Image (cartoon, one colour):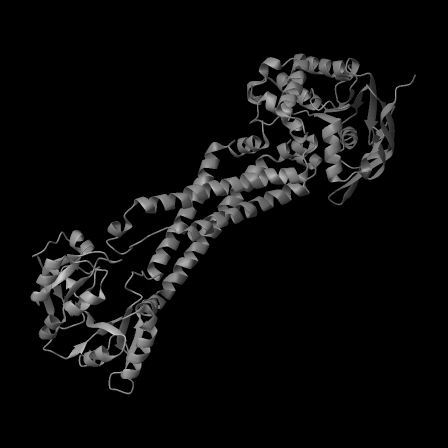
Length: 226
Length: 382
């Protein structure tokens, strides 16, 4: 039995203006991503891999084409609808962690849950579960500056997980980490895909990082090369 | 964590800037309230309980022109007049060694004035002594305290308007009026010193009832119409407002300073909020990515800006309110300010300005956040 697709992309293009020049970031990209897959997007700088990730995650819009995630055509959603959709369906992991410096690890993870109707007790339970999953239950009262880079990124993964989204997008999550921390973070992402069934899409330059994925695709000049 | 807690954490992340910003709003609003209080004090005549009954009669040509003393008998006969006294402003310089005397001296008929100035309380024996000695005077309690004067002391005045110097023996000290600063002395003493010119500065008339006061002013004006000394009779309130109109430029000046204060305050708050939000542009983009909608981000910015301005108003306007309740401004200003009271209207004005400041200073950051996409926001400070 085939695994259903969580992402369906058809003839997707993205163009934008940079001063007087029209830049084509993506050109007629078509792609299917199966549920539970750990897909890595590779390619040189400016190849369009981050743009593709942003469109799949609903934080950028294509110029042409279709991008369906969980059978929802993201191009049809307005700003507010996209925000709601992101909150419920996507977890973000950024290269620079992007934790709020004045909030503790617990509060950073709790942040997406403030948009839900969960009461404080339920929120606490979910945050604890997410932090335990990334092995940081004991560090929940630490501020980001009191954590190492690897720990910060694990908190960011917990924040991405806390709303229990089907899709986790990671934009070069190991780019700012030493090799040990990178291994830990990649291990967690792999575990989320293999054991919990999350679909993980990760942008990376690093072939070693890409090896953690179940499938790897390459982009060059806005087009898929394999 | 609650949403309010999150907003508070953000507002307090740079504590020094927060304290300085709140202080600048507080200081500006304190200054604004103080200016409003001073303006009110300067332009709002004090009304005591007798002021509704008192009528001031002056020369129609000008306040500086004297009136003939013979008018007394005519005024006394006008229906509704309960009492009348000559009332001449002496305007002397106390002790001759001061450049400016902060209290007025008036020549009156002591017995008649006693009926008119019913708010002024003078002990009976002191009143008796004043009436009996035409070179004596009664002094307001504030002036007596300021110059450490007591009964029996002598006060010397150098005439600035009238060509004579006067010396009084203090027969009594009065209190109970809204402005216990003045000195009252015998008109006869002034007349004698001037060689009995047969003139008075003004007449002060007491109406039998407040309802009749307006009618009496008309009757007095008509009584002296087409005479060599036509008069202008008006209620004490109207007379005081005539003086107030002379403060017009001061009002404009204080109003102008107030506008400048508010404008400077706006610039400071807008700059602070813009700085605070610019520093967090990427964080706001992250919040957008996590699912926070524009309106929620607007609410965060607005609440932070509004909170900062309101806290400034609490400290500034509230501080002024507390301070002027505790301080005895009458003593501190040597009687220049009597009430110096922060009114609810002034508090409302200060808080309204703070609210508008909060709104306006949030506008620019909100526009910035609205215009910036998540991707742009994430790239901004990467």
